[in-house]
Length: 153
Image (cartoon, rainbow, N blue to C red):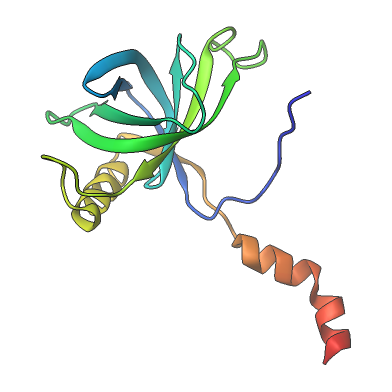
């Protein structure tokens, strides 16, 4: 059975209010096309009909509502699972988690500018926060261990 870990996220995840799509490429060959279900400046969840192998590097061309230019970025597939019945509309489809690699490659923007550009897009009115952490992972760990830390003092 697949394990799921409930680790608090330190980066807010954003859900597109309108269609956000992803064309997925490897070595200039299109692998699949999908829908972005949630995204942050560090990665995204992309629903496709094809399984992307965890650990593989892909090039993404993301299209956002009201943004005429494609947002192109390299990413690494970090997880993949099949959609379940409780996930409306995703049953039987592949959910692929990708982590963005902010590196300069070819015509892509340099990493700080590219990250700022995505953050600007995600701050627009066409997206809604689906998670904004109240504390960081470190804060939660420190709170959980506060008794033991006090004993060491």
